[in-house]
Length: 499
Image (cartoon, rainbow, N blue to C red):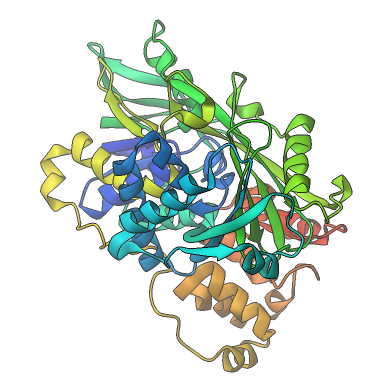
């Protein structure tokens, strides 16, 4: 991808997308694919907001069943299957276990009915079938789990994803289809003629250069920042969102190959304990947030809550704050409605303002492709008939992986572990990274002892994936913050390479 700011001034676009999270990335890709002239602007980096701070799950939303949101669950299960089919390098089936206790807020009979219904709604999109586990079977799988009051368990399947890379692959596909995209470009204001949308005024954050981008249609996909931009559009606009914070901690070591969904002891919230990159992801909180979306952070009370619930579920494990590798928090941009945060619907809304700007509000990561298709159909009705069928959604790393790992490792002079790692990160594009070694022998070297990541990936992130800062590479292209690396040599190496 080429970050060419001057071309935004020279073109008049059919569609301008503001916001490079998963929804904006997919809308840009979908529109470019059907022949529209499209631009995408992101004020930070692609997926820098909520789209890289999720629970790393593509899921149907088993807990939405108690709100009777059967259509949302069915749609999510279908979309989960489409993503697994098109990006198997980034989307993996994951077995979940729900331990059942006598005094749970939700009776065990209700939970058994829930997983059965979830499996039934999966239909042809199932990643694996549910089953009931006896108390003894569960203890054999999870010997450290709390035994007091334990009745048994139920298990089902969902999918684990690489959220930042999935978003990036949508941006890369948009670029491949001719879209003009740029990160680190902030929209300062909306441009109007006779009260109607004609474009935006933007600033290149890296240089301070201000310029106008003209477009027939503008779609705003900025998630929790939506109310701020609505206010720019119309000063008297009323808030449309109810942001809730989802905090997570990554704990050193993997407790199980299975994920666990458990009910909180203090309220009706549920939380996850998930195997992730050799460690354990614990989350999420679900609390209302009223501050600046740019300043959302994991607070000490979030850490205390998650460690308390994890300790209650696994009392034999001595959870220590010193074993937390990293923490992160994102905001769910839920459409405003009353009730407990965990009960607010994850449905999305696509709305057009009086001045002609389109806003995508709410939604969940799993349904991003369906949201994008619906948005493009509304914003570009003349191209509606050109939209692809649902399962036709290739991503940048889609395609069969070919080649013997050991033979490829020998050819490029890297460890087989590095080849496998690159396959899992880049899919069928992994050889594009390795080929950089042919021009510079030093690029085969590892960034650090903490992971199989190599120096060629930093060059690839800059030249192909539009990474412009250390955080762009470290946090989102390579996601090395999830490694247990006290020395942080990996980050230092990236800093040196980007100087």
